[in-house]
Structure formats: C-alpha cells, structure tokens
Image (cartoon, rainbow, N blue to C red; front, side, top):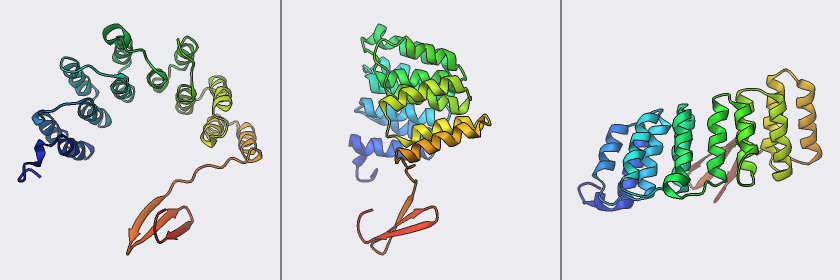
Length: 238
C-alpha cells in the first residue's frame, strides 16, 4: 500500500492505524496516525480508543485534548473517551469529561454517555454513587444505564442494588436472558444459591435461553460452527 501511494486514502490510513493499534503496536500506529492529512472523528476515536484498550489512559486523554483544539467532538467520541476513563480508573477525569460535554460544546448527554459514568463509578466500587447518579438523571434511564449498574454489582456484589437494577431491566428488557444470568451470578457470588436457582427457574418459565457463544472457520467452502459439545456444518452462510 505504501509503494502504491495508497496511504493517502483516508480509509486505507485508518485501516493501517487500526491494524497496528489492535496488535498493541501503538508507536507505529501513532506514527501513521500523525502522518494522516485528513482527520475525521472516526480516525481520532480509533487512536484514542487504541490507547485506552491497552491501558494508556493518560495518553488517550492527551490525544483527546489535542483533538479538541482541531475538531469538535460529538457524543460518540465522548462515549469512547468516557470508556477509556472507566477502564483506566480515571474517575475525576471521567467526570470532567462528562461535565464538559454541555458546558464547552453544548452537547446534551445521551443515555449511552450516562451509562459510561455508571460504568465508571461501578468499576470503582462506588455503587451507591452510581445508583444516586441514575436517580438524578435529567433523561429517562434505559437498559444500557441499568445494565451497567447490574454488571458493576457482579464485580462488587451488592444484593440490594443488584435487585433494583434487575427489576428495572426486567421492565425495560424482559426478554434479554443476560439480565437474569447476571442477577443469578450476583446471588451465587454471595452464596445465595436458592435465590440464584429461583432466577434460573424464572428464565425457564419464561422460555428464555442463554445465547450460546461460538466460533466459525471455513474449510473447503464449508463453514464449521463450533459450540460447546457440538459442531454444525453449513455449506454456505452460518
């Protein structure tokens, strides 16, 4: 691609950056990123996310600061940055980023932005703060917000808050089996086996099943789908 001067194409540039960043070759990815002539929100987001994925939260925020001086971010970019703060444990920086959305850029936070703050607080074990944050939201909380709180209860078991989040999720997203499984896992982690079994029984009564994870590989024009204890073969498609 370099020999044929294809690197001047923004899509090729982003693909190259993405390739190296996902492999953890951040210096090469950043070098290619800095060479890009046409920057857009996607290219900035990918490089920022790349730093965050590999635990370089401070570097991600420094790049975000540089980005703000050149291009106006949108709510999706803020989702990326807030997730970086969450996974890096940068609580104060996450709050500053969230508060700057409306103050500096006039961007009204959406449900996914609120969910990031819940995730930020939840990962840090600040479950009560996360619950209070949800209750004080200026918009209607959705399944992404309550789901973030329930996931946090899986990491930092708290039955009362987990049940609150689960009740809200059952009302909003009653057919999602993952919500029931999360609550069951919270009970199990606290030794409440009877309660965990009740949740799984409730799933069965509702006809809900956990979506099985699987891998696929194509060999000689046949697609092999691998699940636990089973193999399914399709000549085309999945």
